[in-house]
Figure 1 (cartoon, one colour):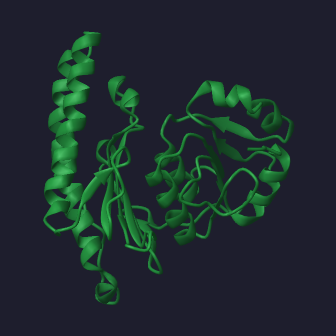
Figure 2 (cartoon, rainbow, N blue to C red):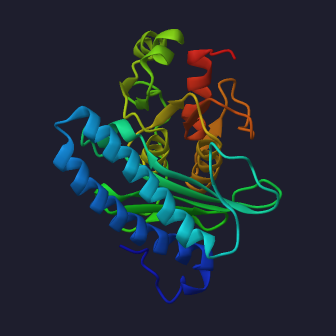
Length: 265
């Protein structure tokens, strides 16, 4: 799968976007091979866990091989931040979903400049054969979806909010009760990055994320910014490099959600 390039847009296709599409092709192949092995041993819990760990390692190796050809460091969120520009990757996100054959699994890549900004990144969904790429000033898009835009609802009632994947966070912050009182419908995917994509393309109206990684923060800011949405911490302040929680939505719903939840810390 590739992003459709018309003559009018050809000059706007950057080398890094082309590289990310190449990464997606490689990642999809690696994922399908791993998925076949995982399906074979899924009935055995220990075997499935081992196969999943191997799949994650294979994906990491694939990403580092392709992106490493640029001469820049390639690191995961668990590794130290290198000096200068680098690639930040998440090889296999929401491994529990993959273990139970759920579609909410993805691979993510972001390019980080030496000043700490993220001008381009991608969320790749091999099981759905889809790759969402966002690039600063050029929008967020995917083949089949076109240019991504957040939904245009202006009232909370009957909207859909994606919840944090850990039940204890939902309980601790009393999210279900507060959202239900506001007439908001809820769903939990178990994958923060795919929640970002769902809000960006209008499949969901809002999302609340907890326990964020550096990559989650970078891509939330980038994808929301390029799809006319807004990302903030729980108090409505812009996300920073040390943020660990977010609220994302279109600007009109965002302010209402922050006020409704009144989350502290």
